Length: 332
Image (cartoon, rainbow, N blue to C red; front, side, top):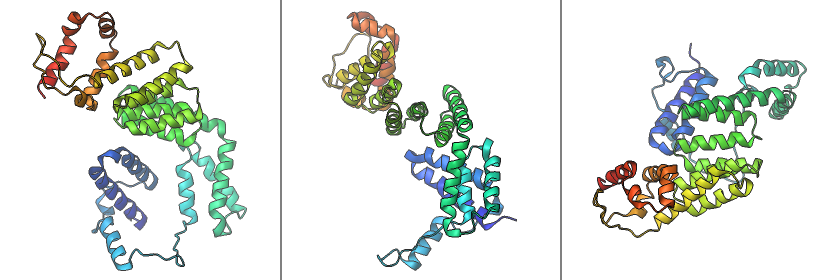
């Protein structure tokens, strides 16, 4: 028989899935929440036995309408979590491989009367979890590293959402590793979440200020947002750390070219063999992430770079990839 707790979990899942449709920018974060709730409560939102007739949002609106939303400084209502709810929160933060061991740990201290005072349950569970993490530090770090490697594999396969889940767990188990944040930043960029990518780069740099790759990934995210001065600053910082890194040099040069291109006159003359591009606003085009990404890839091509550096405009303008790009622009 379905419990009320399971029905509540399914109601929350239905609310979150509806929110995903209404808030595309935060869909990936909501999806992570959905997956966690499914796993923790062992429910499926498509199970007809767990559905209730009234959506959760309507229940909430009705409650607010009947009880009001005003509060005073003298009346404050705080809902305390039960011991079971606090334990479930702790279980969610323990790696699956060590969960049974942690539960045994909890059982031992419970037998010794650690939870006799309900008011101190939260502090006891928090301290117990911290002690457990300290005692299993090596194993937990190994699990986090395994998750990082799995995330790398998923990222290379183009399974970005799966990669994000792996990195989220790796960071949950070990939030001291700069590489985990930098790799999650790469995943956010792959998902076009460039602001989140920059946030993760900042976190990576906090943990390792000498991590050049974190600066380049920050530069890449800024480039994709069209924030070229910030991108160049990030790339220059990376080069301060690794002055001989050719990839960093190429990324900086690419950002500089895109910055210069964004400042070019709005129109260009018609060129034989190319569509009529008169009146085309290149500054606006370069603010489009898709067009900027295509230009970014072209500018990173060694052959294109060589032609530009050598001033070989004839070969450059006859490059089939460039002609294809401008052909597509002419159709817009």
